[in-house]
Image 1: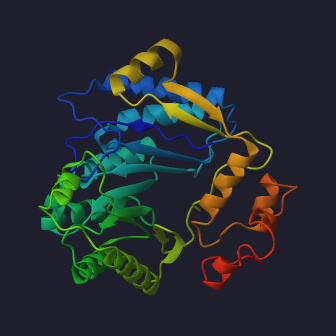
Image 2: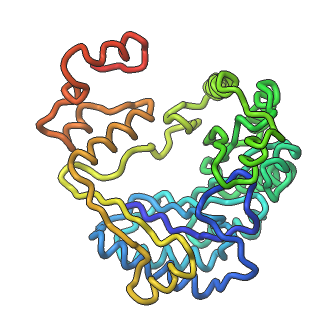
Length: 341
């Protein structure tokens, strides 16, 4: 099992973000902590998880939670299932809430890997994105994180901003390479309905980045990162050394389920207080849906989908057969999009 506790609050909403997050004047952290603890226990019990393989604190901005809250959730996880020593425990952090004393508190609470939402090292780009930090604050946060979590600090970067040139992106990535540690996640900016940035672009106030330019930016970044010694192990992810693999969780013969969680924090807290969790709906994935997940996630990685892994989920239908009759996938193979062996 891989619990992903969510801290749904942010200090401000970024111009491009449509995630489930809330900006409120004050957070009742004691109440939120109690609910996160209770839900972690309940969901691990309901899922019959014996052993935890990773924990990921997402959000919102989970670095706004106090180290005490993070410690309490991890204690609850360890009390409800086996949490082996050395299990990867990641916290997403924003540079604005990632000072050295705070990060040291998170490390003492049990965090051993940090993912920092840098997004850009250019102040004008950060203002466009509506980020609350400056480039200097981002650098300071990454340096502090590398001191406390050496070899286990990841940075997120965005490309494809309105008006961003290929040269500006390459220079920004070069600067990030001089700063970052062992892991980089690259994300193409997506213009989402209802966000301030999308309204500006669709309203004509900002230029729409051309698709060919976006493709060139991605290819440039891949080449630069590989040249700098990073392994391009997943579509958006690059690691300088062996890293926790991006793999679909679960093995054959086990049921997997999708959950629909209550998004709004006050309603979520009421549900946790009354019944122990905020899951609105649990859907057990059918064998076919599990295979689709294995295929879709596996094809995002440089390892692909091995016959061994596929066989654990699908002992009767071979991997070649999944791509239809012989020759049906030939076009994809000839164009270099698919290797089937």
